[in-house]
Image 1: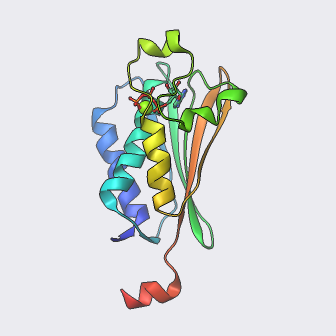
Image 2: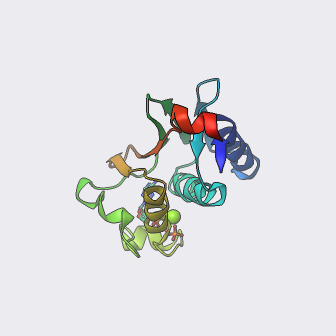
Length: 158
Ligand code: ATP
Ligand code: MG
């Protein structure tokens, strides 16, 4: 459905804020105003839930998670940056594969199936967006994805 992503993004983060352990700080960098996108809200919520819960899961105590929204001319750029253990450069693409879990021994105790990001990627692509990761081992990880903005035309019609 037609959604203002700015308001929606705040709502998602509000919900996480209520359930996030105190040792982790969520920081918002979200512009004011509105930006309309056409999206399936449940699916987008699954996308953000997966990315944000990874950020929390792989963050150290005292870590900050930066949630950023950039409004470009034709698309939105969402980025979720953590200060966790990071991911090796040669593994960055693999994390979007089904059942892939980096560093088995380390991540085993944190639990999970390795499906989260594979599903996330499919859902972002179903919205005509792209998703990728940047990381520095030992410093942190940023997951970024794009989402096309509604064209002027469609905004007027709906
Ligand atoms: P689940 O299916 O419960 O989400 P998962 O979190 O292990 O399990 P994915 O979310 O698909 O699976 O992530 C795949 C792997 O990518 C993880 O096992 C982890 O090794 C790595 N990873 C994902 N996000 C981060 C992050 N923010 N920091 C460090 N490593 C990460
Ligand atoms: Mg996960």
